[in-house]
Image 1 (cartoon, one colour):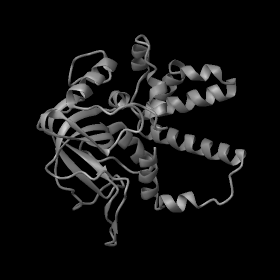
Image 2: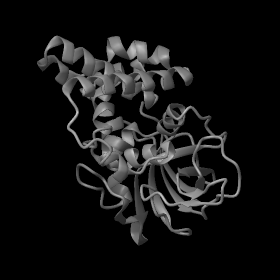
Image 3: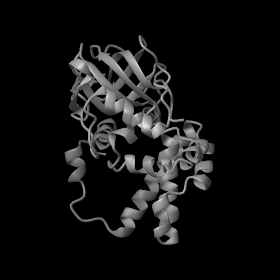
Length: 277
């Protein structure tokens, strides 16, 4: 997803434009293969630093991507390995994969498709750790951070649709925009422009935040900090305004009731504070 590319290039000290123009010549297939292999190794190392390598190994045997069966053996194995990394990065376990498979839902394939930008809003809610209605606070950039981000935005939860947080809890969305130690200000256009005081439906992933931080060889903050998959402004009557973080694929929910209904159809439960199970 382009948003993820923006986050990655900002933290690594590159601009997306510079990245796009860094290689004027078309890379060879072998170059692409080596780059993909290195990125896969980096992601596995990040999963290992998070203590989730065992989950990845179990996902390799239980989480084969269904579409891989139509591919040659070597490509099918590579796809399933890559998908297992994606699933482990999002905190998905083999037990969850098996449970959803009994309901004809390919959780591993869904996780893999998330990173190519072709999941629906309901699927992103299923893969998220937290789905809440929350009120935005003011951006905080007044302390040293250990996660590599430069600021954060606090949100006070009004209602929880999914996850371990409840009404009144404060969660934080990490931002790569903010002041650097040398006094320079970085503006990352990949950051969502939330407006303090407004309510939003937030689809957040703490696991993706932790994976991203591990990829950067940093440490996560101790507070409940996450990155957004989706965000919609909540209007009067529960209606949702598209954006500021619009869906990439699929039809956006029109209101809170339809978002909750869509999530419930995938989870198979009516527990508004439940997890993927």
